[in-house]
Image 1 (spheres, rainbow, N blue to C red):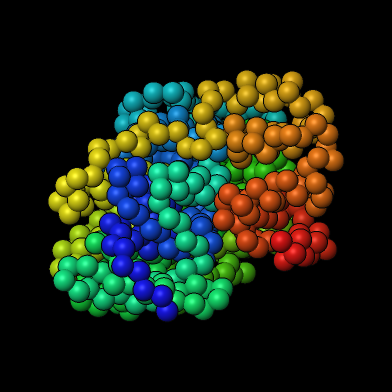
Image 2: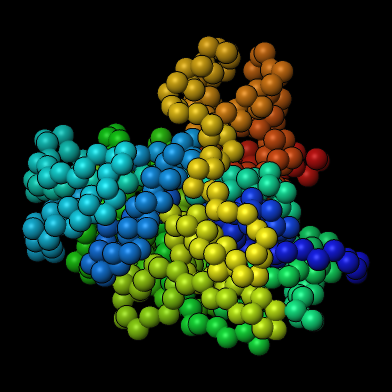
Length: 493
C-alpha cells in the first residue's frame, strides 16, 4: 500500500452523470479533483435511462413546478453545449378520454411551454392523426410537444473528458474501501478492482455521488455522517425492431396512471420504457422480469398497429434510480428532485441524493455553491456556456457535409454515426487516413480498430461491454462470434 502526502481538494466517489458533472465543474474552478468509480463510467443508472433530456411533463401532475422549470432551462443549455449527442425530438401523445380529459392535457402542455419559455423548440399543439399513423385506428386525436434525445452514456464520458481537460484525475475500476477523518482531512483507501492493489489518498472534502449505492456507502464508510432515506426504484426498458418509420416518439398513457415512451432508436429499433417499481438488494444485479416485459408489450400493443411479443425483444436493460424516500404507494409518483446535504464534521462530506440526467449540470453548480465556504479561493461558475468535447459546431448537417467532402471514401452510415457520437473529434479519428483500410481491422457493423483504439486510449474503455454498449450501441448488431473477436483484440492490446 503506497502513501501519498498530497492533499487533494475533492475526492468524488461515483462515475455516473452527477459525479462526473461535479468533478468537471470543480476542476474548472481550479480545485484539485480526483474521481473514483468502482466500475466503468456510466456503468449503472446513467446508462440505463430512457435517454431523454426533458422537463418531465408528467411531473406537473405532482406539482413539481420548480423541478420542471429547472429541467427545461437545462434542456436549452444542453442542446447548445452538446449538439452532437443531444438532438430535438417531437413527441406525440394519443388522447385516451377515459384516462385524462383533453382539457387537462392541453393545460399541462400550455404550462410546459410556459415554463420552458420556448427558446429554441416549437410549441405544443393539438393534432388529428392521419390515416397513415402507426397508432391503432381508434386513436383520432392527440397532442404533440417537444423535448430532446440524448446518448446518455456518451454524455457521461464526455463530461468526464471535460473534467480531465480541466486537470481532474479520473480513475475507473477504483473503489473507495475506507475513509477516516483526521484533523479535518479525509484519509481514504482506494482499491484497484482489477489488481486488488490499494492506495492511500488524502482530500479536504468528499463527494458521495454513488447513485443507488449512496446509502450503502454512507453506512459502510461514513457511519458518523447523518443520512436521508433513499428509495430505490427499478426502471426497465426493452428494445424491439422499429415499430414505425416516422421520426416522432410517442408518449403512451396507461390505466395505472403511468406513462410509457416509445422512441426511435439507433435507426432500426424502438426503445420502450419504463417500468417503475421498488427495488431491494444490490443495484448491479437489477434485471427485467417477465411480467415487466409483458407490461411494456401490453401497452404498446394496445396503442400500435404493429404488434410485438416477447420473442421480438432484441435487448433489454434495467437501472435503479436512487430517489428521495417518499411515502407514495406508487413508485412512479416519487419525486425526481435532488437534495445536496453538506456535513462539515468530522471533515466535509457532500452527499448527493436523487437527481435526473437532465439536471446534472445545475446540480453540479449547486453542489459547488454548497462547498463555497470550504473553498473560498475557487473560481466562478462556468459550465453554462461550456461546450462538451466534440460539440464545437452549430449544425450537424453542415458538419456532415464538410466531412463528406473531406473523406468521400468513408461510408455514409459510419460518418453519420461518428458525427453523432464524436462531433468534431471525428477529425482526430480520421487524421492521416486516406482509404478505408487505414481504419484498421474491421470488426463489423462499422466498428474499426481505429475507433476501438481511440476509445481505449482516450475514453477509458477496457472491455467489450464498454465499447459495444456504452461508448457505442453496436451491441445491438453484434453477434456472439463478432463480440468474441473484439474481446480477443482488446485482450491482445
